[in-house]
Length: 98
Image 1: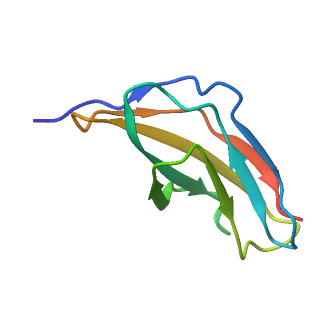
Image 2: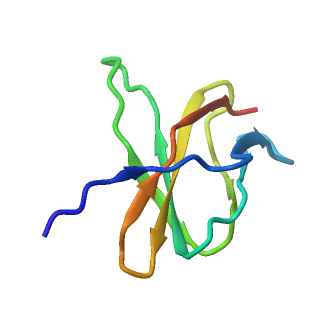
Image 3: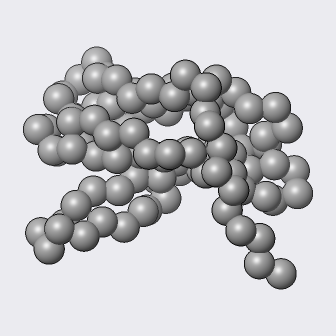
């Protein structure tokens, strides 16, 4: 059975500079009934196309992305997954890595 991804508005979803070069911190308010969050990243390739890739699946409402290329822009989105496996996906947020 196919379940369509539903859009979810993450409250206070932010992407900020990390403490080190090539590091960005993601943070959002926890969503009720969520058992895990899927962190996804997208970046433009040389042909100008982008594709979402899964970075990690976590249970916290924050994540630090490391080893990014400095001065390159990255777009992130978060999918909240509930106990029935339903996935709700946020809009993307873009930030340039320090």
